[in-house]
Image (cartoon, rainbow, N blue to C red; front, side):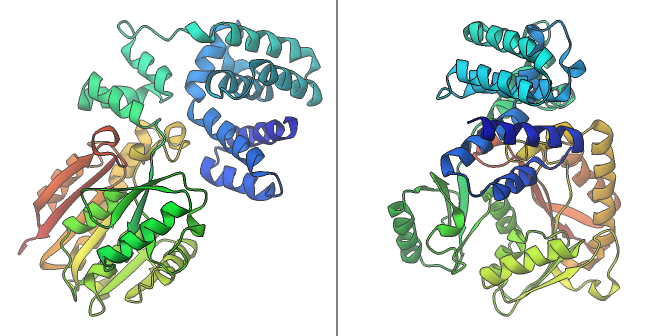
Length: 435
C-alpha cells in the first residue's frame, strides 16, 4: 500500500502548494494511475479527500500532541501526519500500526529520516488516545469548537451562527460532512412507466433509488459505481442534477414557446431543463464566459437531445443589445461563494474569505445590472446561487428590487442541506415591472 499512500502524499503537497481545485486534482491523479486496481484507487480517493475535508480537525489533534505548531512543520511531515491521523480516526479497515509504519517509512524514503521518530511518536499518541480525543470547549469557545469539530474556518462558523443561531449553524455544518445520495433527474417528458422501467434496470445493476416527493422525475441514488454506465445515460434519458436546481427552474414557470436566456449557464443543467419545458417551439440562449464552459454546455445538450439550445461565449457582465426585451425568462445562476456545497467541493472553505465574499456580491449585482434588460416587461428573472450567505442571497434580492424595475413573485427560498435533503441553495423569482 506504500505506493498508494505516496500518491496521496504527492497530491496533498500539490494541493497545499498550488491551492488547486481538489476535485480536479484527484480526478487527474486517478486518471494518471488508472492501471491500479479499483480497491487501490478507492483508497487513494478516500484518503486524499478525507485529508482535505478534515484538515482543520486533523491539524488540531496533531497540534495537541506536538510542541511544534503544525503550520511550522515541513510540508511533507505535516501531510504525512494528516494522512496517518485520518487513517487512524476514520478508516476502520486500516490497522493503526499499518498507518503509522507506512508514514514512518515514507518519511525515511523522502529524505526525512531524522524526523521519522517524530512522525512515529505523534501518530502513536493519536492512536493511543483516539477514543478520548478532546475538542475546544463548546461553552467557552463555541466558534472554535464548531470550526474544529466540522473542519470549517472560524469566520464561516461565526457567520452562520449570527445568521441562523448556534443550533441551526451546527446542523448545517454537520450536514455538509455527510455523504449524500446522487440526485438523478430524468427527462421531464418521459412517461411514469418509462421512468419506472429505467429505475428497475438501474436497480438490477445494484443502484439503490428513492423517488423525491417534490418532483416526480427526480430520484436519489446510492451505490453507484459509474454514472456513465447506468442504463439510459448514453441515450440522454437522465442527468445528474441536484433537485435544488430543478425546483428553481420549475418555480420560474416557463411556458411552451418561451424564449429563455441563461447568462451563466455551464455546465448546462438548468438550460437543458428549461429547454425541455419550453419545448420545440421555444428556445434557450445559454451563455458562459469561456470556450471550455460553452463546450461543456454543448456536450451535455447534445447528449440530452436539447436541440433548442444555442450556446455562446459571452461575458455576463457585458450587455448584449440584440437581446434587449427579447427574453420571457432570464436565468441568473450567478458566480457565488459556494458555501452550500462545501461537502462536494472540499477546497472552497480554504480558498474563500470575507473580502472575497464582498467582491462576489458586487460581481453578482454587476451581472444582474448588465442582464436585466433582456427581460420583457412582465417577464421573469430567476436569481439563484449555491451558497448559504444572506449578503449574496436575501440582501441581493433587496438590492435588486430597490434599484431595478423588479418585484418578487416567488420566494426567496433558502434550501439547507440538513432540512431539505439537497445542496445549500438559494433562489428567488422576480417579475419585471413597467419601469
